[in-house]
Amino acid sequence: MGAVSGAEVVITRGDDVWLWDDAGTRYLDATASLWCVNIGHGRREIADAVHAQMTQLATYQTFGDYTNKPVRELTERLAALAPMPGAKVFLGSGGGDAIDTAAKLAREFHARTGHPERTVLLHRTNSYHGTHGFGTALAGMPANRLAGPFVPDVAAVAHDDAEALDAEIRRIGADRVAAFFAEPVIGAGGVIPPAPGYLERAAEICAAHGVLFVADSVICGFGRLGSWFGVERFGLVPDIIVFAKGVTSGYLPLGGVVVHGRIAAPFFGSPTAPPFRHGVTYAGHPTVCAAALANLDIMESEGLLKRADELEGDLYAGLLSLGDHPLVAEVRGGTGVLGGLELDPERLAAEPGLPAKVAGATRKRGVLIRPMISALGFSPPLTATAEHVELIVDAVRGGLDEVS
Image (cartoon, rainbow, N blue to C red; front, side, top):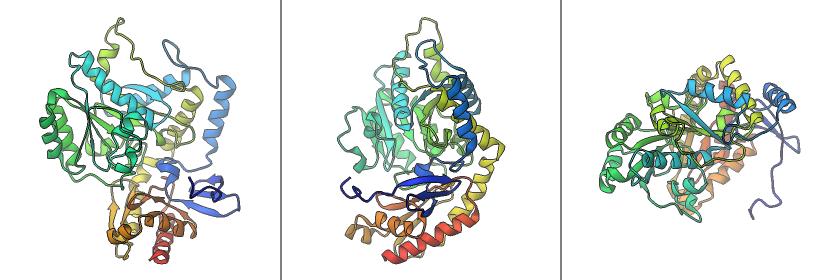
């Protein structure tokens, strides 16, 4: 806070992949804000849908038996797109509270099926699951465990070793483990694609031990990996999927979970089933749901999932061309429209602020990228072109050269 006070960059306007600040300077948004503006900035269709909904019913809660047309349409649509049978949807305000929802649901599912002792939640090193209560506890990045964690019964396993997951479940005792949380591609922890076969094997291990597999697709969903929820690419059928960001392309705050019908059954199986006492004020917000529906319409009509498949190769090839730079230790990508440049560990040790310094030098060249703890992150809108990728790569190369 002290570093940026009085030195803010005030963004005033956006159009597709472009942004402008209050001085009129134009930037290419190479991170889609925070991994989310998948359809690009300034889409009139979203604004029109939001305006139309607000003139009818701007907001109303969906607790108890209350509902509204946009939330019913959206949840039915998301359930139909989900890769699991009998899917049910629980909405909230964003990815952080969706992680809390998934964690509570996992523990409550076991309690309602006769195993209340299954409370332990597993996550991976380098993981990021938001900064709410459960997300802080599930953080695989030590710096993100600030002022926490306060949630008990949480343990970490190596992000790239499925057999380590099996060993940890056995060490704790499978009869105590509720769920395993995994990002299909680790995002804020460095943009780390899964090793071949890792996710598939992890899902097998969870199924064998009765542990719920929770896919955190907050970053990876809605086209970022070329599919609706990201997990389809790996043939996964998770017990719970956490989503947010791309569901509205960030135009309005929305997140939630999609739950396998088997996991939802104890909550829906009987009219006398006790309520799930959890929720947020804006869950099922009709205006937000209208924005999400318009966003899904755009993604379908413009074929943005297929376009993501094409852009994935362009982005990875462009980043690979930076791999021989002396400041770059590793190039990561090739799994979705996501990429990362891991910076030289010796330079990082001497200068921990190196990622921010390179990002600043790149911004001077008209491109906004994401500085992380040891890497630079890339996730442009799915509307970007090969020409835009070239502009990104050229600006980053110039930024690296300036800093080195």
